[in-house]
Amino acid sequence: MIMQKMFDGTLEPIASHPDDMVDCEDTGAYKRRAECVKSVDGKFWEAREERYDHERDLVETYFKDFIEWSDEHHASDDCVGEYAYLVWENREQITGNVREALGNLLGDEWEDSDVSNDDLVDDIVEALSEHVEFDTTTGYHGWSKHDVNFDSFDIGEVEEQVSINEHDLLRDLNVRGDLEEILVDLGSDFYFQQFSRAIRDEDGKFTSKYEYEPIISRGEYPCIMLTNDTSLWYHYGCSDDTLEEVYHQCKEEADNAV
Image 1 (cartoon, rainbow, N blue to C red):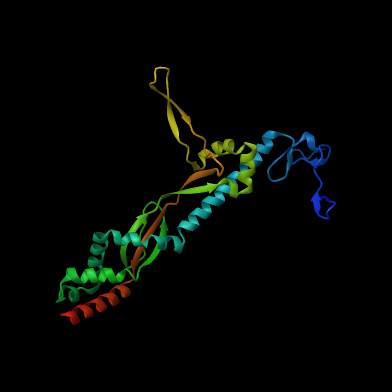
Image 2: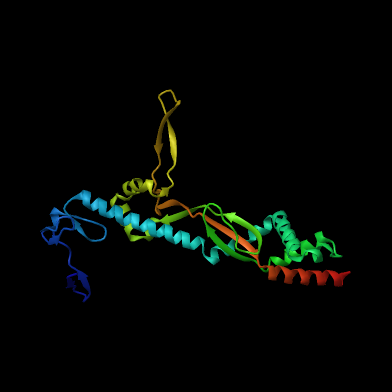
């Protein structure tokens, strides 16, 4: 970029001129700037249709990368760990799973316990809340890898909010007024939330026709709501060794309390 020195000593880029000669990406021609159109990434094109296809590809790549980030984020330990508390909201589910696991693991020792099984299981379940392990699987049917499965959750679809002004590509296209058209064009590949409402006729009755709200929200801080189907399952549980250790600890405490 050619710079010019200002009176105060600072350097500023020299403004472009309509007669500047530029290379066109679509034809390879060397033409006057005024005869070309410029894409948001600084390239020049002879045909607007070619520029549109190029910018559509840029937006498509951006959202593919965004979906990949969303998948990785929701599969991360930090994200999965945040939902561990939900296991203990379904106390009946985890109690049943732990009781069954104790029977399979301990056999006669569990059946011959001289402490009330209900009380002991409650103590064990409470103690296991400090020993939760978790993992994820992908697919419509998720299977836990834990010896003892506390519970599993189908995460499925998640909503992601994309702030347009935080991304140069989206912001510049939106300012130019071309982003909405590209998003509509990409609607078969990505699920952008777009609300619709039935159109009424002259008598006020609903017709079979619908009109759609813009994908881009209005206001000073425009955004896009994107739905991503992660196909993720979250699994929470522990190993047999952990369960046995917690069992003996709780049983000893119960025996000492008698």
